[in-house]
Length: 286
Image (cartoon, rainbow, N blue to C red; front, top):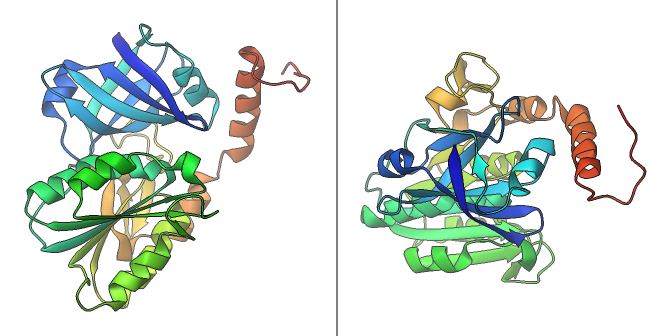
């Protein structure tokens, strides 16, 4: 059992959870993740390790209540526990000196950027971070990212914070400026966002790395649920990734696979809301 030290609701349906996991806290590296299971028989959920404190023995996870299982996890209060936290899993981010890099995060993907941007900066890179969300209420970690980045650009779709629009607009401006063209771009967020970024950087032959989060079950490459097409090869995000050359990712195929169980997820989410009394709509027993 892994004790939950804190559980804070930081924006709509998004929780920041600090969990006691000493071994993982000591060994985790940027880019790696854990798979958690709240109780026996529950769904296994992959979550990026956003931060860790080896001395305290804790890891920080950001959990978006997007389905029944994640709703159950965020409903567990501090002092409670998670039955299983397996990790660290996946390959660490390739941290080298590129020179100038741009890190782009959309929505909850911003949580993945925190350890990545910190490690890139510590490696001597000039780091520009661009983060975006629907509104100011959905922007996360802006203060933390501002402290570890050479420059931080914030965008919101409704214009309530930073520049109005999408993260692709300031990225396009930087790519068009000879003084700000990066040697590498890291993209983490919704599939359409990462696909758009890959097309923008492909033209300029800028190395671009995308962090993928497909459907994942066991985290060991055995189930094949997280398979993605990278160029002409089938790869598995859990053991071959989660980071891949964005110019080789089949984003259309990835998008199709991620929506395979949308109907079932909707039904389970509604059932979870009924179970814990978070809906005023009539609940129908399955």
